[in-house]
Image 1 (cartoon, rainbow, N blue to C red):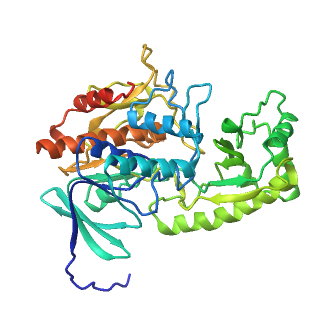
Image 2: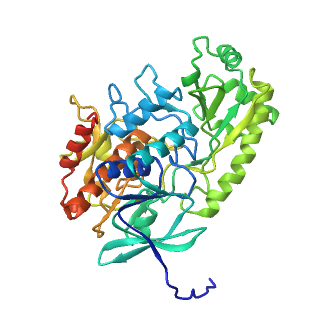
Image 3: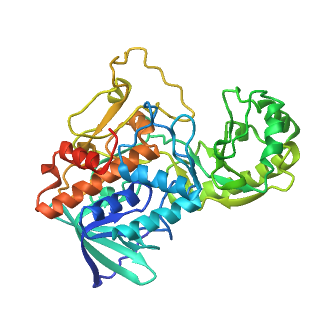
Length: 455
């Protein structure tokens, strides 16, 4: 490969702060709010012009249920987000206790409002290009934006990039993909407005007489299993050339609270070129995704009653990435930890969400679940601590975990809890001038409980 030599240059330091958070997504926004509420001076760097990441920029709505009775939020900040959205009319709580139905645009606004209220210093439209590392400590970050190339220094760094970008740049060893190195599929989600939902509900009842219309939790799906109620419609369209076989592998729709003519679509999904850390793969997903979305819209208008005046109202500016890099941390959450529902003294989050690996069949006949009165697994604080780096935390779907374990913990309630824990740990480390490794996860959990977290 040909190369050039970049000239040495002086980089101005524009920020010196307690806690630097890179990535304002599901975990990052909560981590920044959490650290600021503990009294730390926090700067949050984000590549887009708003917070929420996968939830808002990738349009991944709604939040999934934790599959624990009453759907407890270990993160009080997560519960606050849900409550404030419901109060505003842009959130909804289902009969199963899931209060995580939301309008992506309104979530973006609320997260920004909560960050500003908490004293977080936001820096949008900014990319992290490198880390400043010395003696196993990340002193700060090199960033690029319209102002040029600058340095930001922080006492504690929280990597919430989703892809462990900072940890990777700092030399932390990372896993990626399954045992063969293959990542989970990518998706490009979108919203369609102008739908007569009552009319569409009547249409679905032609195939499922038990279907009931509830705008905020409107749901239907078609998958490769062939058991979706709208499968016959898709098969007819494929036969006539209006859809491709790939269009019916994974198609899922949800209602959007506050939008009474809109549905959110969890598709199209791509199973090749799915490395979320490869810009060429992400570019391909956007191009192919938009082509598929336009094909879907034509299909809806032709086959679905209620879509006569429908239009694509939004296409996600960020590709939906289920899994990419995962750090090697002081503890790696294993397949068995999740499947056998193991517990840890230093846990800071818990979940019972099932293994969710798209396009793959799993068999674990040799593993028998532990039957007790606590049907969930726990995530220890040590999974947030990358090996060989003293002042960095990693929060979100890229913590230290196996491929299978990550497929369960990656849901929004769990990564919000991980983000809140990271923010608390960072603030403690700064306040008491101690290493992150010296903090007991039990102490972090107690603070989360004092805040109102439900464990």
